[in-house]
Image (cartoon, rainbow, N blue to C red):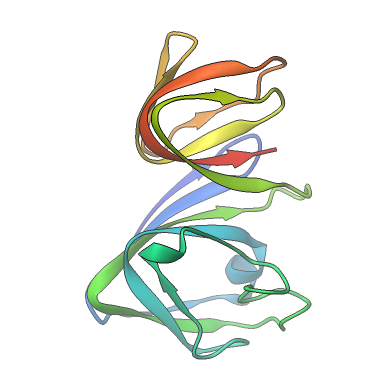
Length: 160
């Protein structure tokens, strides 16, 4: 298992990589602080924990840790969970709470988009340019007080 973690003003972010068929136990605290994950490649399955049998694949995009699709929260139950990567391994970005109720949305940028005022973003993959600044994978762009134009090719997780 490989984890690269970042701490931003709006949230924490961790890029997690598991080798093919690798298993890893996430402690309850880490699992329940997660507000969402974005699968970048491969797949995982929860083989022990509050929602045993739940799988995550790249085609799902952003999955929120909520009452509907969550894996460790007061609604679905909390506890340690054992996850297993699929035969091709797994790589994902997990965003964690900072004690504030946050909204998260996924936006795929291929060209240009307008980022509404009040939203920041974490770059899940690729790179974008805004206000003459370049943001690449793993970087955070803090919210602005006015709409701004973003250009590039990337999967962004918008946060506010």
